[in-house]
Image 1 (cartoon, chains in turn green, cyan):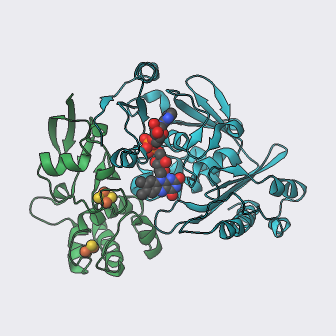
Image 2: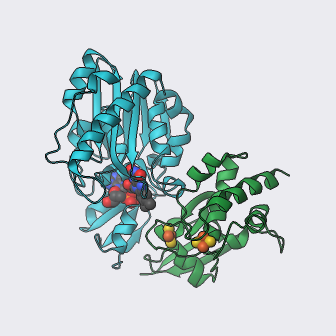
Image 3: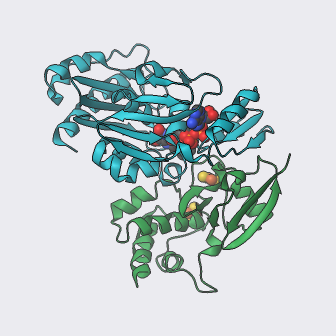
Amino acid sequence: MGITVSMTVNGQAVTAELDPRTLLVQFLREYRQLTGTHVGCDTGQCGACTVHLDGRAVKACNILAVQAQGAQILTIEGVAANSELHPMQAAFRDHHGLQCGFCTPGMVMNALELVRKHPDPSEETIRAGLDGNLCRCTGYHNIVKAVQAGAAAMKR
Amino acid sequence: MRAFDYHRPATLKEAASLLRKNENARALSGGQSLIPALKLRLAAPAALVDLGAIEELRGIKLDGAVLTVGAMVRHSEVATSRDVAIGIPALARLAEDIGDRQVRNMGTLGGALANNDPAADYPAAVLGLGATIHTNKRAIAADKFFLGLYETALKRGEIITSVAFPLPKRAAYAKFANPASRFALVGVFVSEGAGSVRVAVTGAAPCVFRAKDMEKKLAANFAPDVLAKVRVPPDGLNSDIHASAEYRAHLITVMAKRAVAAAVAGK
Ligand SMILES: Cc1cc2nc3c(=O)[nH]c(=O)nc-3n(C[C@H](O)[C@H](O)[C@H](O)COP(=O)(O)OP(=O)(O)OC[C@H]3O[C@@H](n4cnc5c(N)ncnc54)[C@H](O)[C@@H]3O)c2cc1C
Ligand code: FES
Ligand code: FES
């Protein structure tokens, strides 16, 4: 009953034999040990599990791994170049955009697509764009600042 | 989730035959409604037929007076399509306001229509524009497609292939969104087209419906104020923790007026 699934994860070609029920997030965390992608709600609400599928931010808890057949997946682990934080990650640190950090990988992954579409986002654009990501700690204020600063840093 | 077999056909024909042969098979598009249902075991199909690899179901085409959108076109594609922005900008704006970025990046037009969630946005546009739903078997007018709570005219195994939207003269959608899910507490789509006005209401009742009293008033004079005193009666409207039937009835008039104002202003 196993299905052979092949995809590229953070630039690396991977193939696995999976029960079709396996969620993409389960595949990433349990088969690839990429535990930076978090599971907050497992119901498609919180965005903690956000990864990029062919460049689109998606909720990995609401997708079957088999749906990613042939896709390019980018997780938070693939965002930094070598040991240097990506400018968006650095901006979250510099602007106190995280407290417990649970929501942060998802926030960063969503913010990266947001900034690709809106290189110079207003506060309103950021708040609307991060609608699918919940944070229980920060009150969002510093997340908005971090995304704005990250966007500016990405232009440099 | 209960165990299921998984198929990923490359053609519509293959998909149709898989759905026909497997008694309890279900189509899978974006999975944004179906996967949560599988997790809750509200759905337990024996097999899933993933439509994700079928080229024929993709694409947006603006051709004369008709905008055709493939069943597998994602909400985010409709929101950013140049053809949609030219043909029916109200449809692009509706798609832009469905759920959140991640949901729009997976969810599809075909999935949203087949699902017919009482609070979904697309049914309002399809009914409010008098669109035609094409399947692998036939063409179904919007007026005959949405039958009830999560119920459509689709037969078992029938696959939506595309939707043809006639271009309206003007149209707009106004939604009072549930702040948590972004689903419509009440959403109203209005359009003025070839000699007719349509007003479609979602979120308020078990199924999207046309507010015909409003249509009559607007046909005589397409202006928000003519709706001021037109009220859809609350009997039969949804009443839940989010809003009472009376409140939803009130919102229908408010949203309809806003939609007409936006259509008149060309926004
Ligand atoms: C957090 C969240 C917020 C959301 N907010 C909104 C919102 O604000 N407004 C809104 O309208 N929606 C919202 N949705 C729902 C979303 O738009 C779904 O994507 C959509 O309803 C279903 O589309 P899908 O492609 O994901 O379908 P799926 O989940 O894959 O399928 C849904 C159903 O349709 C059937 N089906 C799928 N494709 C076809 C086809 N081509 N032919 C025949 N049958 C088919 C399937 O068998 C299944 O029964 C939200 C979802 C989530 C998770
Ligand atoms: S864990 Fe996926 S959306 Fe919450
Ligand atoms: S920092 Fe704790 S959930 Fe966002």
